[in-house]
Length: 169
Ligand SMILES: O=C(O)CCC(=O)C(=O)O
Ligand SMILES: [Fe+2]
Image (tube, rainbow, N blue to C red; front, side, top):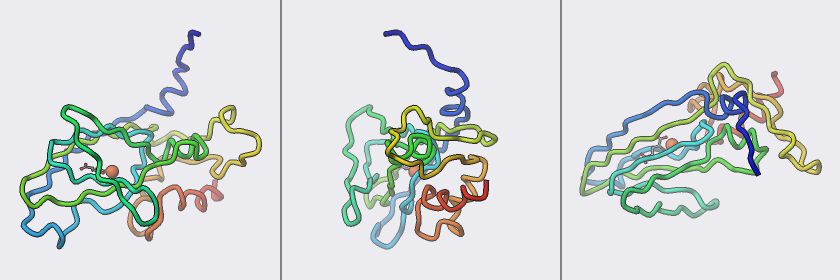
């Protein structure tokens, strides 16, 4: 079956891209520092390139974390908060963190693929079974970076705060 891509939807999913270059200097006592604290990305998807050093952990449940295995030349794809919102939780954003390394410098290059800041994102209703009521109906992605600041998050995920904020729209 041939399906053509709707360019309006494409820009909602992938309309803006940002690349970060992360450098984590070697740390003699990694226990005493934080590489990157636990968070989920506000993106639709994040494409992550990392050197063969390791240190990226993803959360499995309340108490356990999985060290993302390193495969030569592989990339990691993280589901972000925007996709969680648009899919009404069918695809959940993944909480992750980075632990500093005791024996080598670490470099990573995340490419964040996002809706454009001016976009309002909705869940795609036709992909939402009738029995599952939407948690977040409409959401202006321009405010996501401010939600994800520590002040507003207070230990919660961006999507949890969005459930409260969305009532303002
Ligand atoms: O350095 C990494 O592997 C991940 C960095 C990260 O999670 C981020 O920049 O959002
Ligand atoms: Fe991240």
